[in-house]
Image 1 (cartoon, rainbow, N blue to C red):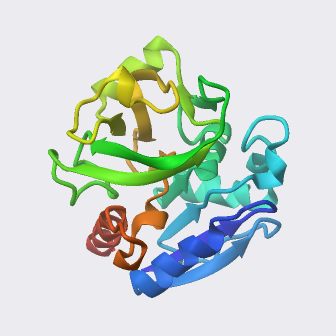
Image 2: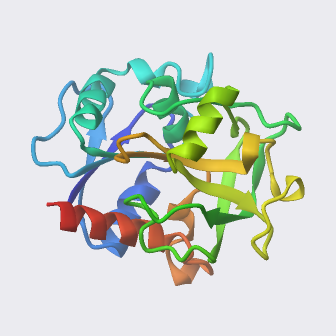
Length: 233
C-alpha cells in the first residue's frame, strides 16, 4: 500500500503521520508538497494531516482548499481513491466540498488539547471496519475549531446513510452532552462521504498509535484502513 501525506505551510502533524504510516504500520509512504499539481500515479490513499494550514487565516482550511495539489486530491477522491483528513485535514475536506458540513469554533471559544473518548458508529468504512461496536477509544484532540455543524437535512442524511463514523462519548461509552468537548451537533467527531472513500475526523489517532506513548487506541483505524485497501486492490 502506498500512502501520500500532503504537507501544507503550517502543517504540524505531517511527520507524526509519516512516522506512524511508515514505521509503525510498515507501509510505503511519501510526503506530498501542496504546491505540486499532480499526485503520484500509484497512490492508494491520500492523508491530509492536522496543523494550522496557512495559519488558519480566514476559516480553518479555507486557503489550503485552493492549494494546487488539492485539485488533484479532489479528482482522486471523485475517482474513488481513499482520502483521510484528520483535524485540519477534516476542515480542509469540508471546505473543498468532499465532505458535508463545516467545523466551527468550539462552543466555549477555547482551544482544547486533551484526551477524549470515542465510539465508532459503524463498521461500514475503511477506517472503522475492525473496530468493535461496543469499543470505547481514548484519542487526543487539539483544536479550536472542531464543532461540527450542518443543517438539519444534512444531519438526517448522514444518519440515514450511516455516514457518521465517530461520536464523542463518556469513558463508559455513553453519548451525552457532558461527553461532548466542543459542542459538535449530535456529538459528531467524524464522518465519511456517501461513496465511503473520503473520511474526516477531529481527534488525532496518529498520536495514540504506539504503546511507548502510553496509548495505542488509534492504531486500529490505520490497521482497518490498510486491510481495507489491500482487499480492494
